[in-house]
Length: 241
Image (tube, rainbow, N blue to C red; front, side, top):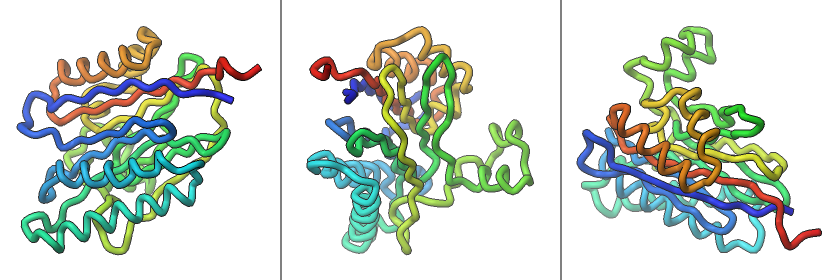
């Protein structure tokens, strides 16, 4: 068996007046929610979604189905908020994270926040952005380099707060001691390249130090959006022999 140690950091950035990112770091669930800035009450949306999904941390044992149902409940909570308070109509958020499901990890995603795996000195993006630009790349209409700076790169094609509910991506994978997982809003990846992110993770083995340094680096690089980072370290359970 393995255990997870987590570090988390967030910053409003240099240009925004409100941090519309939310995160949760629990016992068996870790997630980032990025409120959609172009929508009403993005900060409220991310907080409501994170609070609803945090309830999954109390489950005796999570499953991919439980995560899917939790995302559906979070989606409905946003719709209910919009109906009850018309000034919040249209609020939306991403929801991306990692959960323990027995001996496995479930990687889940709705939107364009991301999960990466860092192991053996290499950083690999595990999630696929639900964005107009990523769809253009997948269709062969746009090359990946151009996508990095495309003016429509922040337009998401799936988010919580929509009808019908978005279909989440969920992947199951074995948890291996020594690997790290990075969960982040696009405030990180819009400012730092994968190579720059990997360099920080190589230099900072401790989860909290790595999260703090990644957020600081994104703010120093421009900080044009809110930035939130969770770093998870998978360790062997010292109580297991």
